[in-house]
Image (tube, rainbow, N blue to C red; front, side, top):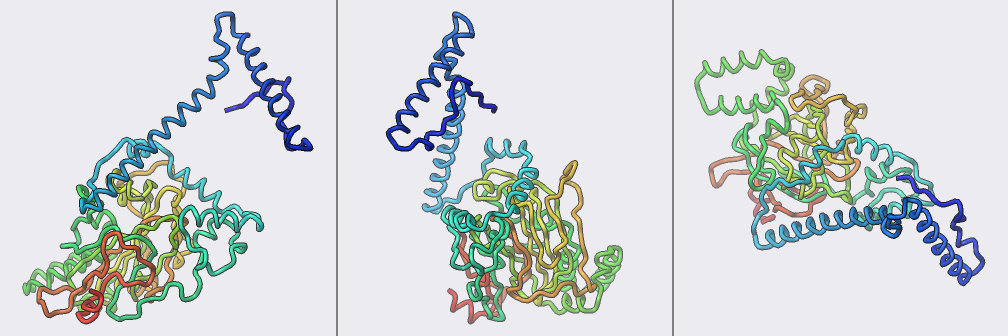
Length: 446
């Protein structure tokens, strides 16, 4: 909107006047001149023109817009309050699409996120950095005392978002039978999956499949086939499965002795998952939850919807439609995958184990059925070796991480079985145990 001012009204510089009394007199005169000029300009529209109405056409439209936004915001606060009250009563919120979800599909969220990424990379003057970062910390409840460097040394918002923490701020659980949280965040969902094609509940009333989240995973299918083979003593079926595995280049690439030995020795059959939401004020780096070998990376180019709690209740297939990076491999208990899901203003997902990866790149058209970009890590069958607590990647703001993994399970009551030591809605930090699979440790946690 272009603002026009009358040439009869001089520029308004009241702070150049020597004292407060003169500033007040100047301001009163300035307002009087502005009203006179507005009425004179309105009278040029004709004798039947309502000069007072025309003088306030633009301000009236602005007020109407602000009122509309205020009503929408008030309704959102009311709905969120109702959800909180229901949750306190033990009633879980259900999936319910709304107008906002439809409106978001019309917005160029990928382009908006690229603009935001550009702005966050702009260097901030040194004297202004502490003020900007402290304001951000107050708004999003960040703990600046954990920052590894003085605030003046973070040149841009991006550097501040993915900042390292001081040594010892995130101790890693050293127990050999624990799986730790890869991020700081809030536990949204967790549980056990029946098989590789099972569904993960996004919210009550809507679910998505593991395969749609991780993509076509021959490694997960191979392990599922191995479990089937263990339950059947039919050697002909085992031979058929071996022949099928030779038809896939991916399975052939995994046919090294180390991977085959890991799968064959793995006594586990249970498949588990955990969904963790990172708020904008959380620590944004992703760490390794266990000692494991990352064998493949998949990059899905998708949308960039917000992933906050409200979005999970209103947008279908939220995690499946959004852009994401999936790391997949093996650990001592079997299959392991981490899905880092992008969101609005968080199109940039960085991998420290693959710095050349670029996400949220400009595309002419995004097709939902388009296959992901894959990379097989070298050396073949070993990939990238990560230790528990190692840095893996980072988000530029808050987002969501989904961990899918195998762990010990048994129908015998006296056998060791993986058990979560968390609850929905818990706040968790990097290095804290998500679950354990040792009876003595579980009894201590409970």
